[in-house]
Amino acid sequence: MEKVKCAVVGVGIFGEIHVSAYKSYEKAELVKICDINEQRAKEISKKYNVEYTTDYKEIAQDKQIQVVSVATPDFAHKDIVVEMLKNGKDVLVEKPMATSISDAENMVEEAKRHNRILMTDFHNRFNPYIVQIKESFDRGEAGDISFMYARLSDRIDVPLKWFSWSGKSGPHWFLFPHIVDLVCWFAKSLPKKIFAVGKKGVLSSYGIDTYDSVTAILDFGKFYATVETSWVIPETWPAICDFYFKLEGSKGRLVVDFGEAITKISSDVKKELLFPFVIGDTPIENKPFGFAVLPIYHFVDCVILNKKPIVSPEDGLNNVRIIAKIVESIEKNKIVDF
Ligand SMILES: NC(=O)c1ccc[n+]([C@@H]2O[C@H](COP(=O)([O-])OP(=O)(O)OC[C@H]3O[C@@H](n4cnc5c(N)ncnc54)[C@H](O)[C@@H]3O)[C@@H](O)[C@H]2O)c1
Image (cartoon, rainbow, N blue to C red; front, side):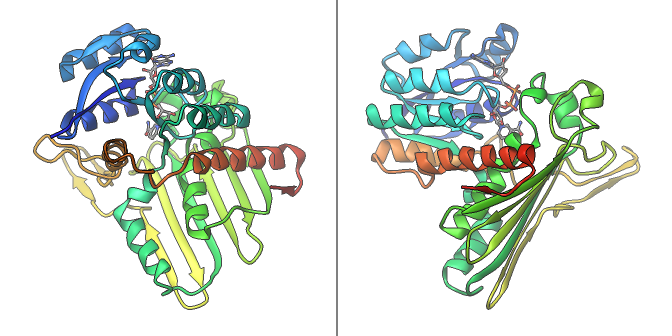
């Protein structure tokens, strides 16, 4: 079987998922990983038995590598992605594609110029619970959309303990990409007007200058969607994230509720009730399973078959444009045209 030679740049929390996906997929061969943090690069190199470098340009210049995942912090994708595209690689970039419109436009232009495949990693299109209701929607079972509501929030330990770069991102850049993509995917169009509010205070009291929470109304013309995100759910909440989506239509109602998840573990030993988030990436017999790895397998398949991924470069770019407009609306405290 043909195997595609792959590499991962940025092997932190989520980059490791890319590493384990390439390692476990029979159509992929992981040849190198890269992280500027040498200690982390060494740790992943040892754990997955793969060569490492601390210089992404070494990956760009390695002619055998065809596919590169870029999983560096939200604001640090562009230079690496562009360098890979210029050197003939196909690139799977983590969401958000970028935290500025110019960075995202630059990446899409370079992908076109070099005729390369570029995909942003939007998980919901690979989430079986969501895919189920999307198929129902596409069969017309909910009728025409009246409105949609989507919420994706994290516990406060994500911005406080997971990252050193939380202040350069925020719930809007870190979490909105998933649900903004979700509502646009159902809408099959882009919003015409946007109004948003955001509040700061809790995270800034810890020295992290970003929004605690943001709510935005995306007006698509014939219908609208409300998207909501927060990075300040208390640490005592039993689930790491809170995810809810509903679509109210002229003929039906579609709901996916991950609020309390499906799996519950009550333990006198641990003295807590836990709602583990199992559908993202749960290894079974040492093979990763879930919607975190499926887009990575899909990307490899597209490269082998020279097929367009189900997420287009423009989907990634428009997602950044919408979030930038949400920020503009908060800052100007008015409705903005998209
Ligand atoms: N953590 C999650 O749940 C999650 C989920 C989905 C997507 N993502 C996305 O994945 C990306 C990475 O997030 P993360 O959670 O893994 O962050 P992280 O901070 O855990 O990892 C980022 C890694 O990139 C490395 N890095 C930074 N600059 C680099 C450079 N120039 N060259 C090489 N390595 C570099 C850092 O040293 C770090 O190890 C982000 O865009 C994030 O939004 C994260």
